[in-house]
Length: 283
Image (cartoon, rainbow, N blue to C red; front, side, top):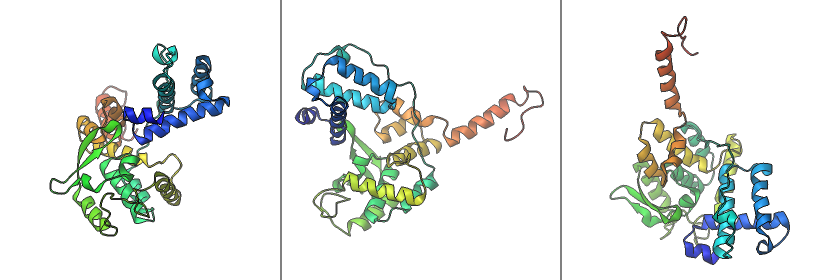
């Protein structure tokens, strides 16, 4: 399965997710997954959706992982993966985007400079975790003040580089001078470990008093939301985020702080002369 995923060009993060999906199925039944029937896998998918109540995104990734294993690897032409339509959970959870001051507070609470600057980079550029911890030095174009990011599905995007971030990178790079990685691990053999980065983030989150819903990905959510609140058009935000479908970006337009304020003023003006007695400020 790993060889097939590498051949298909799936990212390491997607590969791990798909493997976990198959492992979870095996643990559920206590049987090797290649010995399960279509009916058993079908029942498992229904159990995840209707009884366990997994989120929409989780069910999607789990289902695609199982489909890759059975349909792509084993060649099982099951109707579950080729003909049937699986309804996703109806709930749609909005991303948690922290206000700018909370992002700054959270990043400042990170003790080690390498993890702190990595989080700052993720927030300033809207990066995913994998894109942040494995940031290559040669992705930086200081002449044109841009960075080149290779994201999911090997898609490339060019991002503008804030001058203040470039200054922090240069100062930090002088502390290790690694020829390849901007954020090398302690031994310098590779980039930062995802697990160690996450542990550092969770420690800072607890110290700063934030709840478990706050994850490193919230920095990316904050990046998109704050850009929209500042007036940047959604198409530009889509490009900066690396979204192939604009619907992935539109979720951030869900009544951002700026839009709520504009909406409140608009409703006030619209109905002030219609409702008996008018509308009072703040109500």
